[in-house]
Image (tube, rainbow over all chains, first blue to last red; front, top):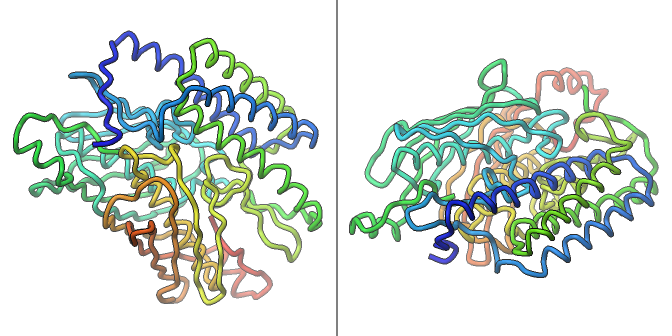
Length: 221
Length: 221
């Protein structure tokens, strides 16, 4: 499959890259929030933009083709570093530091700032959906039943405030190549959004599973 | 309501601010993609990070409190410039340039790059949900029936590739303060993800609607 790259990096090299690119992405997250909130003078904004463009040009001098994909080492854990929710190299991702239990559970504590706003002061309803899709899929994968999202249903119990939040999910049941997962987002006062989803093992992956020569990745997205 | 700010800027001033901050956010979007894809040397990455932090510090010298909120002028169109999907000042937003029809329709053509990836080369299922929540809500608002998301159901027909995409939605029916909307995302080959949602006018807004002294904003998120 295109985009699944086995690069066989050593654990030390992976740690070095994480320590290099993680902080770079975090700096861009902070820049993004500053761009939303700044009220500095026009000259300062124009100067900032020119400097940002110059940095981008330098970073682009040597880069991978297309998107990051899913990179992994032989027998090693996958590195979804470009993922829009958990990707440590992706400035759009909060990123969630997902915890996983082989019993089919996943959860994360995280914080959302101004960049994730929908209604004033509140998390965008679609951002809640984005996070719930990820944590439900991770629960399925953690339980050894990875899949692509088939359906996802969200119930918004009340508004989710920007700030410190928690999400969690677990496998509800498995029917053949379909895994049903349920979960929610909560703030300090309790649940704000509930979700249930069906995750389906892609046809191309079923063949490998049947042949038993292939270990399913922990998460397809 | 906190975060709903009437600032009564002139049309000329709004145009000036859009022309100033829109390109700044766009530059950060390009930087974000470069951060995901770059393979330059360690020294270059460390230098880039230091420069980004310095820019952030300068932009923060004068900034609004908290998040951007929804700013508007007397009788003027709302400016959801911090919104995670359509916000022109938000580097996380693609941003979608939403088209709206008073008959209760909304649509946008847009492109998603490496920052919106889930499975390798594909749009994150949760990003599709994020975009559909916005376009369904905009359709409800365009038809004069704005609301906060109550429920949202997504059916993933097939994988959505990164690249050029289209989304659209329309009001299906209205029942009191509940507006039902349906829509989809499509690539050049057709529909990839379908959605239906219920959008509910918040209780605090119903009072204003009853008193007829208040025009509902086009969109609550």
